[in-house]
Amino acid sequence: MTAARPSSHPALRPALTAAGGLAAAGAAAGVWGAGIEPHLFTVRRFELPLLPAGHRDIRVLHVSDLHLAAWQRHKMAWVARLRRLEPDFIVNTGDNFGGQTLPQVLRTFDGLLDVPGAFVLGSNDYYGPRFKNPLRYLTKPSEGSSGHGRPNLPTAQLVAVFEDRGWARLDNRSARVSINGTRISLAGLGDAHIGLDRPGPAGPEFDPAAELRLGVTHAPYTRALDPLVDAGAQALFAGHTHGGQIRIPFWGAPVTNCDLPRDQARGLVDYRGVPLEISAGLGFSVFAPVRFASPPEVSLVTLTAP
Image 1: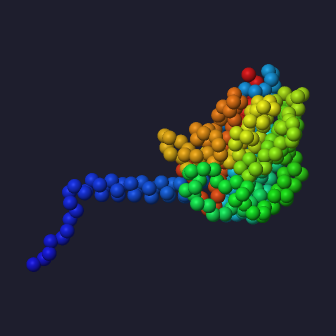
Image 2 (image 1 turned 60 degrees about the horizontal axis):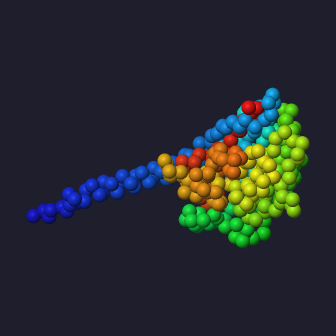
C-alpha cells in the first residue's frame, strides 16, 4: 500500500502564500536597493529668488557625498559629464572619498574644477570607511569624533588641488566671489558630525558689502546651521544625510543622521525662515552599499531675481 502524502492544512495556505509574497517582495527590494537604485543618478532642480532686481541668474551645482570607490566607474563618468549643465558655480559639501581614491576623485572632478566653486570637508574626507552596525544608524546619529582614530586619508592633497584650481575652502572660513555680476559672500563651518565646527570668537562672518550671502556646511546639525543663520545667511547648503539612504515609500526617511527632523532629510526645506538645500548625495559607505527610495543625486539650484 502506498502511504498518503502529507498536505498543508487548508487554514495555513493563506498564511503560507502571504509569507511567500513577503519573501519575494523582500528579495526584489534587496536587488533594487543594492543593484539598481545606487546607479540611478539624477539631477534635482530648485529655484530660489534671492538675487537683486535686474541681476542675471546664477546656476549653482551642489555636489555632495560622492563616497567614491575605485571600481565605481559609472559614477565617475556621470559626474564628469555634469559640465553639460553649464553651472556658474559649484558647491561641494564633502565626503568625497570612499577609501584611498585620491586619483579617481580628482579625475572625476577635473572638468568641474574649471568652474568657480567652494567646498567643505566631511568626516569621510579624513577617515577611511569602517564597518558599523547598520541597525544603530536607525536609533541615533552614527559615531562622531570619539569613534575615529587618526585621520588616514590624503586630505591635504585633496584640499591643495581644490584650492590650486580655484575652489575656496569654507571649513570655519569665509570667502568672496563675483558670479555673473553679483557679489557673493560665502561662510562655512567644519563638519559638526565629528566636532570640527569651530567658528571664531565672532562666529561666521559675511561681507556686509555683498549682494548675496550663502552658508555652507557638511552635516546640517542645528548647532552649525544656527550660527550661519544668525550671521545673516540668505541660503544654506549641506549634505551628509543621504536623504535617509533607505526611505520608506509614502512615509519618508526614518532618520537624518543628525538632529534635524526626518522630514528634512533632503531637498529644499525651510530652516528658521532661510532656505536650506540638503543634497541626498551620490554615494554610500562601502559597508552599507544600498539606497532605497532615495536615488543618488546632485542639485542644480538656480538663483534668480524676483
